[in-house]
Length: 344
Image 1 (tube, helix red, strand yellow):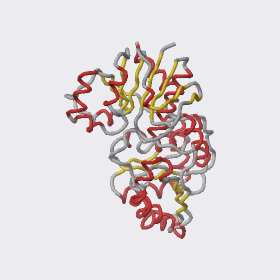
Image 2 (cartoon, helix red, strand yellow):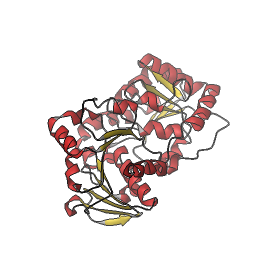
Image 3 (cartoon, helix red, strand yellow):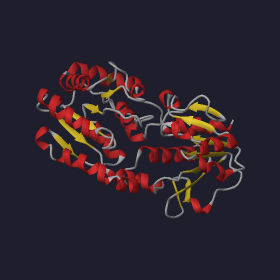
Image 4 (cartoon, rainbow, N blue to C red):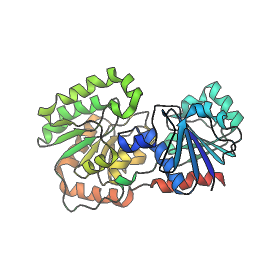
């Protein structure tokens, strides 16, 4: 059994938060990895901005102020290289990168990376390409995010569902663009179609509250578009979202330059829901163009692909089967095993 230490200095959350309310993708991944490592039999301690110590599903959580145990076998630092120095005697250090990595080229970060030489874990090829070859690092590896248990094991359908599209990402990631394309191009061509939006600031804790001024006008517009088939549902738990995806016909999401993996696309694909995305950042890694959805350029092509998926039952059934056959992704147990292998 190895001692694994993990740190995060972002929003307030702990293992229970993941079970009790919607949580952002990065935070959800952090919890899933910690619990996955504990399930493998390792001793896992987490230090982050949680409010009080607790042990949940085999993981010992405590505030950053309590410090890290000395001599961890594996130290996983989430996003911020400034925290690498919190575990000076760790046998193997990892910097788990989630955002586009250009921020790491700043001199203060480069000095830390030169000093600690961590293994840098990226989420995919497009993500790793955001960090220049000259950047300091111990080594660079790619480990994709895992797919949570509620999205695993969806059955194959024999009939296409009604034309219900879903949006399950951050409202600031082009939801306003999607609403315009939906109103002007998609809904007029498929009058029975609905767009269900599972999105809102509560997913992102205090950060979400700080972005209310940007999110609110977009969500207000969505709420006012009921006559155009738009249904604002708000954030829901992973279990509930998986249930909702069993009734969905397509994920519609433009993509965003800030995406480095896109759990929204990965989870829907694992559930057998084809998607329409633009060819932005990592989106072509998540959806097989023409196989499990469409990867397009421009709103006209986006709308045409969405209309086809929402109206052509045979096309949908082919892409649905392709999702289930090729797009299941890794479970978190497999991802945790890949992180544990970094100790070897």
